[in-house]
Length: 225
Ligand code: ADE
Image 1 (cartoon, protein in one colour):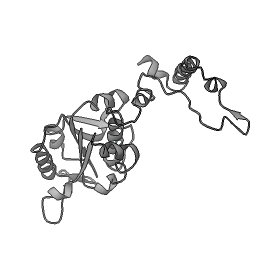
Image 2 (tube, protein in one colour):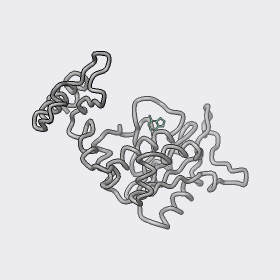
Image 3 (cartoon, rainbow, N blue to C red):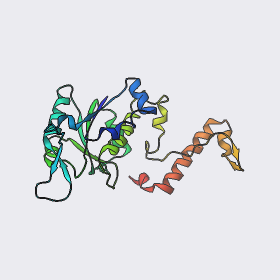
Image 4 (tube, helix red, strand yellow):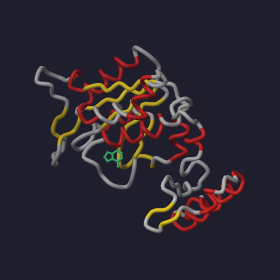
């Protein structure tokens, strides 16, 4: 899978893809993440990519032309299944959406900044708009990193033990059960006896019960959705 992220603040995306699971996924050649600086497609030599909004109002708007040029340049190299715009008014990201997106071959993610992008980009180029939550971030970059992370970890081969993504919270509309590690007792705080029993059947049953109980307590909406 190739994920191309378009932004006017590429430095914001330096770190998220340079460590741990996401770095290893790229090292293994399972995914390629490329961050593209919109300023390289600027309308003039000053690197201009934004302008005042027609009709007035506070805040700058990302211009149409640099975005069109950047997307067309990417499309001349490969085909894309989705061109996603990160926006607080987009479809809310959830695990099901991440699962579906992880099956795609190539995607572009466009990050807005300032007041957003010229609406014609959304009308004519964007195939999907995604929000990571009902709050407003300063730009789409952190949201793009969240989206890409949620997708990449689901691609087969990325996690060393593939079942570990399958047992994540939300995969079967349940939250994950609690986990413990050594020491088995600290300050009198004990690990549940069953986890030390060595009886895998009992352990699996206990985990299932805990998942259901936790979901009822913390996220009852998941059980009815
Ligand atoms: N850009 C700004 N806020 C955002 C959000 N909540 N989700 C996606 N993109 C955004």
